[in-house]
Length: 160
Image (cartoon, rainbow, N blue to C red; front, side, top):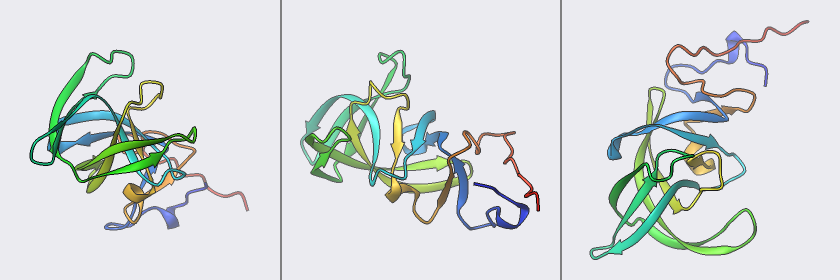
């Protein structure tokens, strides 16, 4: 994608993000979790373990905060948004819990729904699917971490 001065996002418009971003989950007090923007995935997911369904339509789970040290976690209790069968990338169907929370990418905040899943084999702790990205974010697949402080959007002037 070639970005010019003319097609940079306007105030109030979609925020351009890279295919990998460091994001915050302010409702849960979590900062700088690595998320992959995946326009091929419909839904979003977060790396968790120790999922326990609680009375009152709630669920408790541990978020794996670090890819290499899965013992570094934060325990969260949240209302269950819904449960459904989800087909993973390898074609298997699993029953999954979904919860809602707020993400913060750069200066933009958005309420999204997350699937609770074990992503220990994946590089990124979190996956942002199309439903989380739509209307608010544009993904530049050639870039990473565009929303970090002091990280500037690279502008490529066309050679006409």
